[in-house]
Length: 209
Image (cartoon, rainbow, N blue to C red; front, side):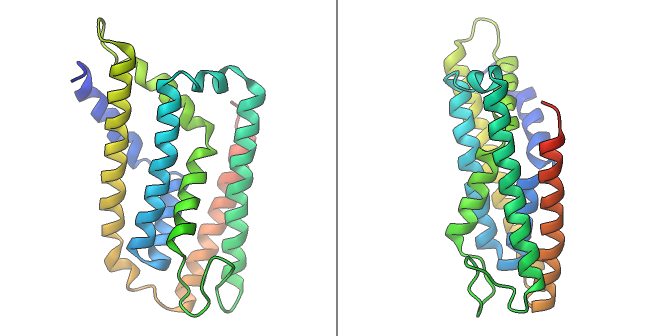
């Protein structure tokens, strides 16, 4: 096991529970459509994280870090996607059916596949996750430890904690989601989440590298 595993676990635990766009998305989807949809959103987030982790272990994230153009392209794409989700949620909030192409009107429930894609793209298009892995993992490789094997193990630990967190988080949403079955509650939730995602997207664009 890596020599610095225990302090790494502490850092990862804090990073995992820190609120962000992925947590907002999982929370909205879970309260609107139930814990299973939230779970699929979380799994999508985990797949996006794992892609960044693999890129960092193989050294591919260094390309993104070294290129201001590549970083900006990914950042803008991520902001546009967050804005896209935000606009769709706001529109769903003002429509009486609360629906859309990804929401069956009769049930008002988001499909699992769409929820998974939302979580995946939200994380894939976040260059800060790539930089996080690029800068975080090497700090916990002890002297004399093989870099590639240790960083790979640390990345797996990070991913395992993320999966466990999203599972616990989505299960905790079950009793609350049962209270938000009405159309008015869904529309309010969509409106609030949509506005917040629009704000996050704008902040991402305006933030310096």
